[in-house]
Image (cartoon, rainbow, N blue to C red):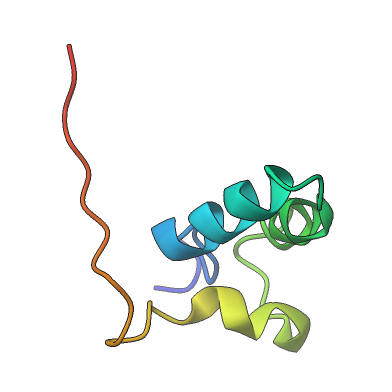
Length: 67
């Protein structure tokens, strides 16, 4: 199962976090996210925060389909 399912996926709350920081000229979260996604199938404790779902206290992320 680990061979076909990545350990790290770009979860919406982490992508939003990186985008919000980038809007204030802080690119560090974006660089960390991209580094974590370089080897998404590898187990790496350094990037364990990218494996967690959003906290229940956070606003649920909602997407809309566009045409």
